Image (cartoon, protein in one colour):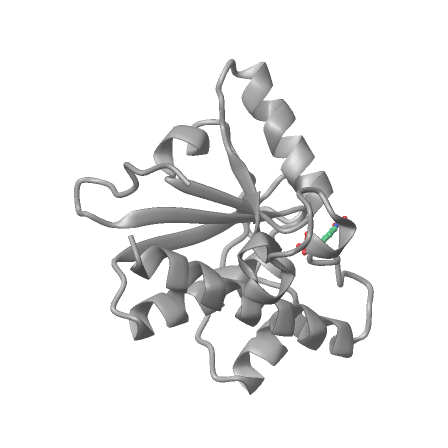
Length: 170
Ligand code: 4NP
């Protein structure tokens, strides 16, 4: 993680990225915002998708439902990832290896050296896994039953707790 995190307001700017920005990354955004506030961490979080199919829409109804079940607030409008975000965020976090790969390619095309992390790398229970291990992916729940969204939320909660703990130590 770069050591010079934080913008002029002394906030760490984090962006969560998935494919559609309707299922996984809005959940990761909502949970991280809640946990960071709870920990008194100055952090600004938003999310986007590498694809443009759902731009302007709200999050998936199942994401909204499972977040609400666990008491997380969310106000969401889908946006597509733009190359300028590489410079405008301190930390860009992908949900799966394909999202990570797409972002790395985009950075390379722009001549930028960006470090894209995977969300589950921050889950302390998975710290033994090597870089790029398939289990470090948050699987895409789109077109899956709502229980898969609950499963995603479990993964997100564990990983963002690890992320907040790491950031709080800085
Ligand atoms: P997400 O899920 O990347 O977690 O938001 C998806 C949502 C929509 C599509 C794919 C994945 N789609 O192909 O429209």
